[in-house]
Image (cartoon, rainbow, N blue to C red; front, side):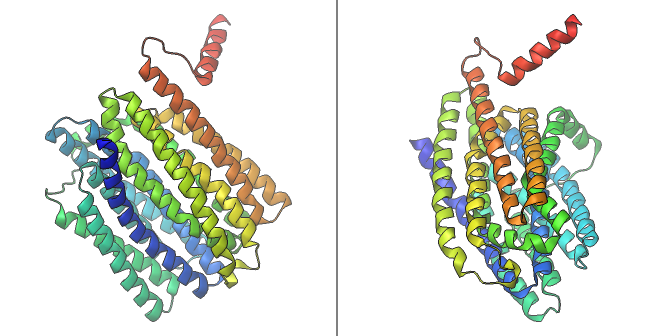
Length: 433
């Protein structure tokens, strides 16, 4: 009970910061929904998707490994070494995803590509720093930084929309500046000096972990394809304007992703320590409890959104059936919330390969179904293909997480999953040939 109460306190503190950011992003989306054309809002939605892609790469390549290895470290020197290594790598990854995002937005015809790239890069770097601070139990500092980001973002976005001749470009620069302010607050309030190093020992330390991180990188790629194939296909085939009605409704569900990230930041270091101490029963119990909480919460939240949707009026909706989009969005987000914890379990075990293979399978299912639906039906129904993809990932994450935990609990009675059995049969057949 003491452990659970401790987690609840951390959750309340974390969700407070996430709620501030989510509220700001939500308000900005609603404001731009009424100010921009369908084409302009579609471009803004795509930039937010690219921001999510950047966060996923930061999470997979630096933030999650930092949280896991820092959680397993038994001394301050080990924690500091991993902090410097992954922090340096995060800066490189943030610059790369920012540059790629700016180029892609420019290719889509957006004149504010540079501003969008700055926003994605700064957002990605701040995301890594927040996770690293959470791993060091500095939740209060993160909450202060979140508040600084939120208030600065509100003020700068209001000024950009009011005085800028280009509301879209001004909003991107405002978001970039707000993220930089949040980073500065983290640096200033940190009780220890943050260090970045590009010397050979740092990269050698990172390279030693690459055998696991390469699967994490592959997992980030397949996760992005699986999670963002809806936006990629709809925008690529039907154009940004066709994606605008879907984005206008999906943005209302964005707080669920923010909350799921808060759960990950809260539970990952704790569960990593428990697993390192061979307390597998407590790990599995916590995974099931928090999954139940998130699943029920997402259903209640989705039902509340269905009552709000008819009140939204905007030219970006282009007469689309928001009720149908809302129901399909619920079918997307409930599985997402339900597979957060089993995915965390697989990550703290270090089984990034199976996560990558699961999301690759989900990507294949999603791409095939969404492309098929777009060929025969309006873009609205493409959400059904995305929901099938998320349900596929949900089922396999739970199957493999339970299987891996069973092996941890019964080390002398290890058994193969159906995937492992299939590989064993294939290897035996190849050997006989």
